[in-house]
Length: 250
Image 1: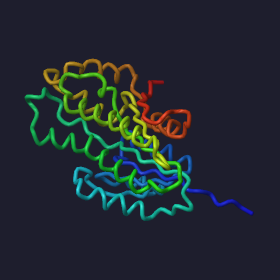
Image 2: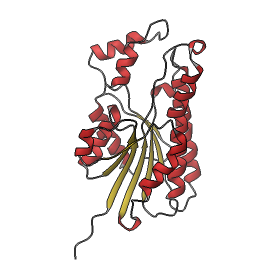
Image 3: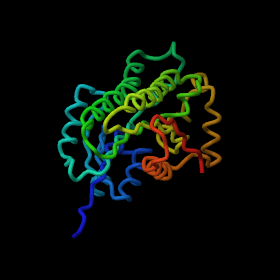
């Protein structure tokens, strides 16, 4: 008698470009069904079978309905593993705190911090009685641990993501069917965000020369390689929940 193949599901935010596309490529190549929530839809991903939901994630009042619509498509009896990757994020404005626009401060924190908090809460609550393998991966940054001149909001919002990871993991310790929670810093990756960083004014970002040098020295991580390593981490059962990890350059 043939055994039915069990489904593996990935839900990811910000999957239409950059690191998100690299993550999606790796999960797809391993047979995972992917749901991607982002502001823009990538037609290439649609052709590859990715279910894309167009949503400005900063419209936080729409997050619950969007996620529940995805959850309702899943069959507990056929599901082996489900992963939520909170990947969407923004650098915001690169400037000293006194020069930042209040609206930009609020929107940056909303996307980088509030959205992962809400999505993680919904994910943990919905699947609390599902006896399947469950994980949340929060994409963090080395900037969560190191202050950069001109990055006060970005550094602070990513530091909050690290603490979200650790506290959620602690809360899941006694859960009947716990969710594993990890934070992964992908290193300096060759994406549009890095292009934006290199265009910064030195008066707002004193470390700009270092980032320009990384590009010139071909020392940036590749999004596809990072995506593969994130998939491997997600499937590494030796890693403890609550771990904050970093992908080193190859």
